[in-house]
Length: 264
Image (cartoon, rainbow, N blue to C red):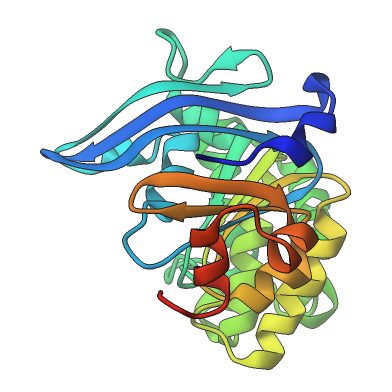
């Protein structure tokens, strides 16, 4: 049984995403088994759990990327503010502008410059005024804490950057379209400790302006960057709690066993 008590004190109006009865499948294999979870606005919510528990599938359902996989399907409700993202008439492309995604491995477009990588999402989803392009690039790179490192080489390929810089470039590309929510699927798993620290510092800054959901296999990272933590196990939400309480006094024995390393 999931624990929701600490989140009950958050006003309903402060919840950016409300998920109810969310189920998801790959073919006949059910990977999410009726998830109910509310995500507060302008906070970082970490999703933890062992491999195969449904973490990545869950966040991909939040911006309808799950449905892009052949044989995948889902049912239930995902409310972004007051809009059900699965309602008829909702354009998934425009939804993904509101709910951006940063993937596990840095994926700058190899044939594009740093500048064009930042602008790629905007060019796909809207008309881009040339006069505003420079301003958008600088703002996005500053928000991603990358501007000072690349401002003199914007015409160089995005792939010329280090791994950590490439991931921040991907974050800048996501921020350039001015999303409301940023989803991150283990964004530091391919990075060294120094690059990881830069991304974690960035998360503390970004949560002032964005709602962030981060999947992480690193429990220490969850404690460092998140306000709330949700623990998934075998496609179910076991517990949702304030992060400090989750790691000091979990309400479910399965949560305690996982965070103390008894399985995982």
